[in-house]
Image (cartoon, rainbow, N blue to C red; front, side, top):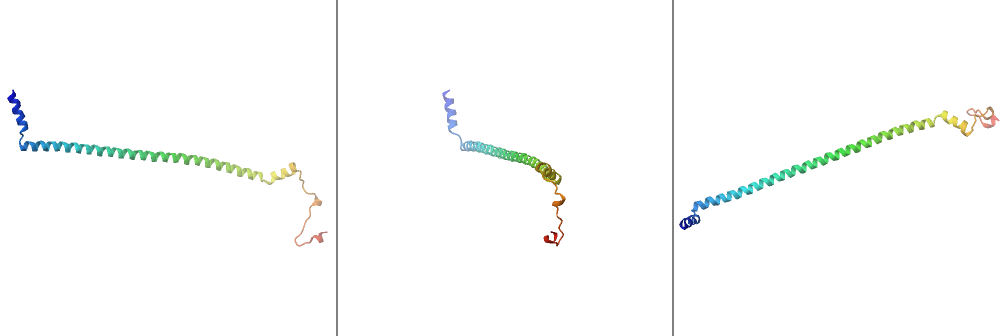
Length: 133
């Protein structure tokens, strides 16, 4: 048994040049394959990260767009309300300036009266005040 172990140990130690070259090529091929696989994984990870970043930016942009639409709609409603109030105030101002209302206030609340016949003076154009006396 000792002989068999020593013979296999010698054979393992005395590989031919071609066997060493084949083993070396296999080793470097496996190493290159592992490096290539790692590079492919890294590229895939970078692509996934890029897509995720793009998606996040896209979602953020649409969220901002929705927020701006809500803001615009709120301002439009506020504008409509203010326009209605402005229209109501214009109608109220027109009714407050009406001659009938002013006459009623002058007569009833202030106590003014229409002028009597002796309080009215008719002036003709070109006539002097001395001629009327």
